[in-house]
Length: 285
Length: 344
Image (cartoon, rainbow over all chains, first blue to last red):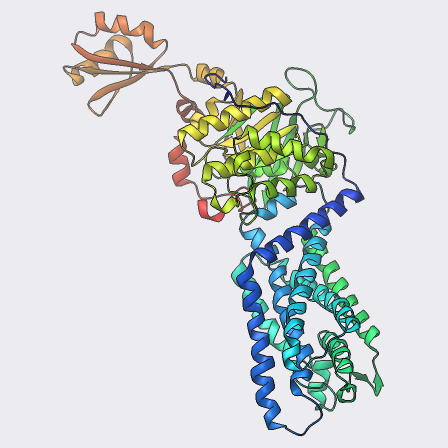
């Protein structure tokens, strides 16, 4: 029996609240708060924002400048050509890292807070994915901010186009990251798997060279890489604005130039599929 | 196997005191492969009761709690929490329970208030009420002034208080606590109990906790002793102690060997020498001591009589002290949400 416990004199009155039964609206609130938390975490980790800028800038200014001198006299500036790929690289790092918060939360306990709540697990995953997509887009825009030094010309329509494209791409990359993260328990294992994925995905995306006119095996690998369909629309937009549209050769399917909206749709479908599979695996825990 | 005699509506099992039980389980069992972590548990907890699960690590406490709070599915048997079936009405159960885990489940990179706000949104607490409810609970646990601080900067006791405030935010009917005050200093421990009991009275919350601390179990209205996946004893701490019955008497004498022999021949008591003192168990120790002085025949230097503790109760039912049980038992349960690797 309970005896000997004097209530603190400062103890204030409380009024009980009533929690409504789970509804679609509640799931939406859950998506929103999980998304907001991702962004709070993104903005709180400023060193990460800065360090994620570093590697893309190395590619852009060191590799870009160095290679330009080698192929002087070609069409246009290599830095402008590399720029979209470098933007995607920043998105790749940021969005994968955001997806890692799933593993992080599992390892450090916060996941249990979410798992025992009366919300769909899919809502938690969707919120995380939208958070990673937003963080990735913002990081991509930071790169866009330094694009002027690499010869990129700006216009309002270009910025708006890129925001839209970056969001779709970042969403798909985060979804892929979540698919990896959903079955992994330790953050180190996640980082190892991500390291293993990032570089092949990046090199085979056409970020550093055009994907047309490649030897057959490389052609195949690049054409099945979803990120190739992410870099290409970015590049078309950037090069068109810089007046170097002719350099673009795009992605061809049996000689047919795949239009940019279709490319983005493919990326979006890839992302939604990855997220749906991740949600299925996540729900089974 | 237990056959439910009631229908599956929200009308729930009747508790011993009558009325709707806050928690009830029938034949609840959980198997991990070949290991039977929980071997069929029956229990009823009344609304507003403080109920404790006492037992060593690996006894099945955590697995049972995980089943009750919908984090694990029972292999067989049924359970209802706050009037809802833990398998068929998961979301309803989740709306009506709060959880305070042994290891922190706070986001340490968010402020205290952000953690609570996250919880409020996740549980769909009406927006108009969120801020005032958060303020009330943070004031209750004495952390309103620190609401803007990152949880990372909090001490263990502060984190636990914030978790309790968060667990209570959505006015749960049942608050599950896993080792709620383990690792906290006595002062913090006592204040946490004060909060819990204030809330229990005020909002009629049922407290359901696991513990392997005897002191903590004393705070409960009723306790169940678990060992090897079964409930081996269930009752109020007083009743359990009374059932064990005997008081422990320790005497220091001029001649322990002679006294020991005398205890055996005249009173039929088996005594043991421990740290230079004679120790034995006897019913109604206080009444026995005067007889002892008259009839022992050896000079007695000092006497102490101790009421049975829950340690004795645990000993009586499991044949081992709780610390020994912990030391020798391998972690039987798969590491569930309540059991983290680092405590093993």
